[in-house]
Image 1 (cartoon, rainbow, N blue to C red):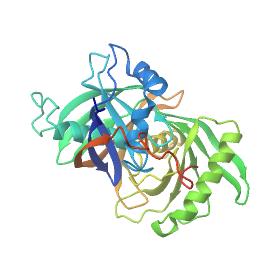
Image 2 (image 1 turned 45 degrees about the vertical axis):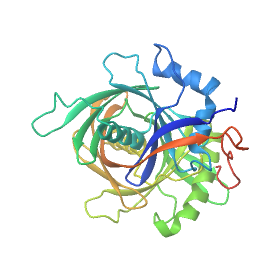
Image 3 (image 1 turned 30 degrees about the horizontal axis):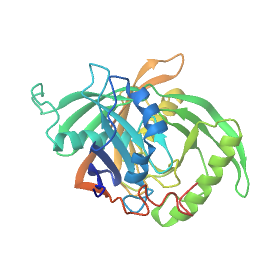
Length: 328
């Protein structure tokens, strides 16, 4: 008998320009275990799923994948595991907004408890903890991230070819180094230079003892009316975030709150390198330890339904891997 092709069903979307690929069928089946434990099994025994979905020729380095899975937490409507071209993410803000839009598109959000304004609340189990979300309709969703905090303030590193760089280290589901001033223009026509600088900064901050920092966030003045800041975010796999970055905006809010620059409940509008925006607010979880609960709002839109096919004769069943020039 001839071997049959493997098929993985996905729904693609973009959140502020940044793509998310949600796997809705064809992934591994896990038992009644936590999403964190499911991530362990996925990484150890089923990493081919990540490679098929994200590596060329079926994907690309900018894509973030999201495996829709069964939650163990009975308060959660869904579970999700995020991944990219080099590995797995504890949390992904733009990806969660994209997941919510995808669930709404598929009719998988229970609207029976919708408010008068049409908003629907749901909870999602991630590997780093549960995340609350609200679907507002017309592409808009809000997510309440896990507790976020600043880890180190105004930390100085020496970056070869650039000089002394200062910034804040923060945790928001992913590790960030938020650079206070890099001397570079935060603009679309300067992206190649920003990638080069951010990669060098990441090497330096990792060498300085912050191995968990895999995202570098640079800031500049906004170009969109009403925005407070414009950012450039280098992601773990060497691609840059087209959106303002949900966990990156959470990290920014934690630092602003710690410095007393943004009041609890006040809105911070973060602009991305391509001009899209997220709105962020926070509430204090623990002022003494500097922990906040950030809420990020943005829009996401479904762009495609697809069946990814792995032909048994395909010489690249798991994709082409990481090609030269795609890695940090």
